Length: 180
Image (tube, rainbow, N blue to C red; front, side, top):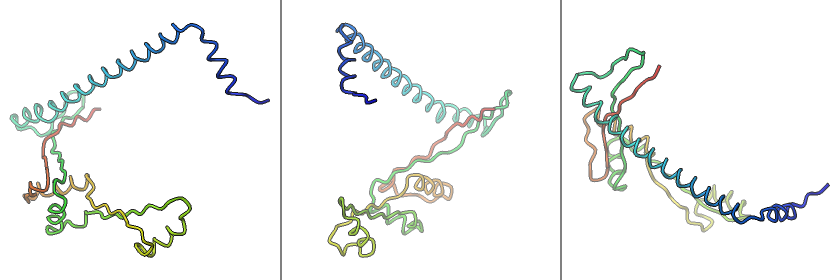
């Protein structure tokens, strides 16, 4: 038994004889897309509000009360902890500072070479000869974001200043609720 999908598809298309059915489905899709967009906007606003409460309002209140951690009646715990964020604004200067301050090992240096279809042999040769085959490698040098956050934390805790002309750093508070 063979199935002809093209004929089946044409039969299904012919079965829809009322253009109003199609119009109502198009309208249904538009309504769903609008509803999704509204829900996403609502979630974004809720996340922004939660961020303000978590990073500013609760930490400030707990600091005024000299509380770092507390346990609620229901067994849940509320704790304010530091969090760190960082990005590199000037790569050359940042990499130089990292190397000079004993952190050069976190800089990753990746070289990528792209070969076309049927060039498996050239790829194998290139693995041993690098530039010997006339291809120019693509070099990517960088620091993993989580690793950089760790360096910011370490520098903050030891009092070592990271230069603001090559790093954009942020140290803030975050409220963590452990639910029971």
